[in-house]
Length: 193
Image (cartoon, rainbow, N blue to C red; front, side, top):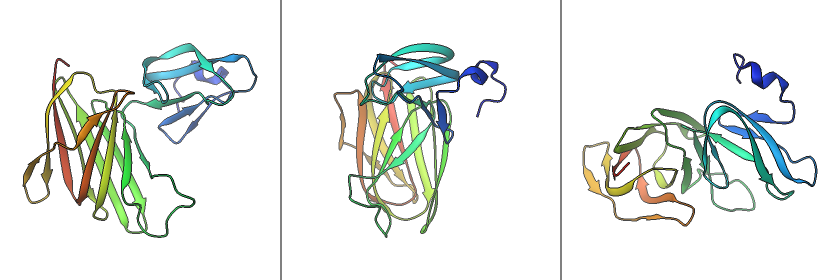
């Protein structure tokens, strides 16, 4: 994943899962783990603390908590708890989003491809999708800095809807629940970013 990073060749006790997740398995019971982060910005999946690589970190790693880091700019599709993956579309689709200046992800499903994209600047975060199937979304945006001033949803037909069904969770993630929608874009205006 990082062929131009000479520091990564010495790290054989961690691996990338796709282009978004860096996994550092726990291999002893010491509660500590040395983790190498390749170049770029990384977010601890559990604490949401941001780190800049290349860097070596000493992380708390009990046997029941896998050290897991997400590359900034990643969009991770998830679903609610279930005994099995449904045969029909996942609805609602949970998207865990790690803001960066530029983000892009394509979700391929039997119902078609959905393209997600967005970006973060000093005081605005945008996140949109097009294609795929109409469904409900739960956006979980991790690590936005600054207070949310307002947000709205712009639909494919140009309608702009103010969003009020959102909350900041205890772990500082911003949770937004959207009812059934197809192509759309969410814009969040931040103060004090």
